[in-house]
Length: 99
Image (cartoon, rainbow, N blue to C red; front, side, top):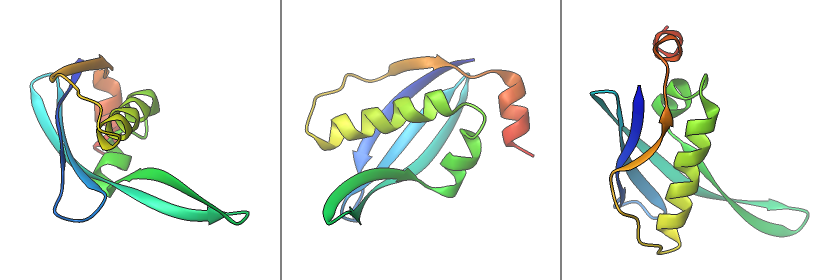
């Protein structure tokens, strides 16, 4: 099924983003947060999806990574034109994620 990112909006919580994705005809909403960690005395930032996001994209991590990249672009202030088609999500993957 065609998968599109419909919107990426900052949340009221600092460094959080609400993401709306359309998989086929079903809309899914997630919260992704930018997290900071210290590795070898350096601060690095990464993006982490909520439990629903992680569960849904565990069998299609390529689409999950594309969403992370779009959130990163949005956080950096890049203008994105929605909807953005990011690939295909197969029925079998959705069935596995719903178990």
